[in-house]
Length: 326
Image (cartoon, rainbow, N blue to C red; front, side, top):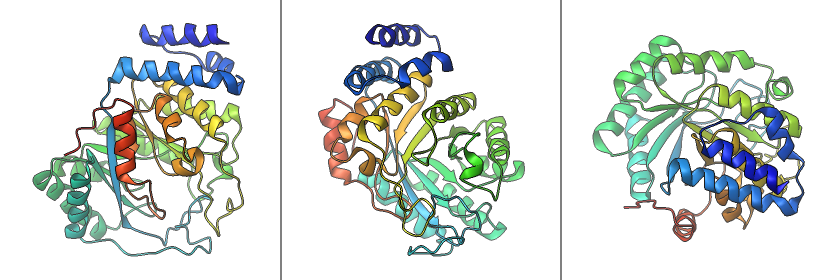
């Protein structure tokens, strides 16, 4: 198995890509071989990205009351979950959050809203916020707003948007078990519109929704086909009241293995650890980062608390990353 890992690593570093069949050869490796897989993924990361991490903070600009039925999400109106909900924040409040994120050492800032689409009024608030963040901070600007049409995308570009986040969530073959209120194809349509407009793409999803190993690989190659700039990897943090509330956390070595496989499959993308990383990796955050990661979501998440920011920077420093924290 170690020979296979080395062969595939060489193919990738020489500029090639591996097939899903070659990736399948790595899925069944023993836990004792996962450190070598992770180390190889780390070398691939270093080859293509050096030691500069990409650090992103988010703000929940509109929370809850979502009409979609994604079975992992506590913001859905279909489930009885105890979360804070609020309408769209003002552009001034969003800007204040951006300035705090910049002070915390973030490199980019993402404005995230619940729901499938925004009203015209709420969308106008986001446009003002993106413009203000561009004018008053050094942060890269990102949004996660659900479905967008071509005119809205043009307006976001004019406002100064750099990147848009739009997850596929899980493999196409498993998606109907996760969401029934909109189709997988709807997500791909929005991604294609963003791509055509020249906006950077942030496309990822969530591990441990009940998908098989084969579906995780399917998912990775479906993401890779969108040619994303950033791939956020989330891990299910089961929320009370949702259909997945009783699901156990992902095993740490299983998480590390698939983080590494995502790096093998998408060597040139930012592989970003995002929500649920504390639950999946626990005290072994180092293992996840060493498995080819070059991006983190820092600070709090949408409905849950994140890892301590100072500990994240300490860990990155110890691993030899240059985070250029101000």
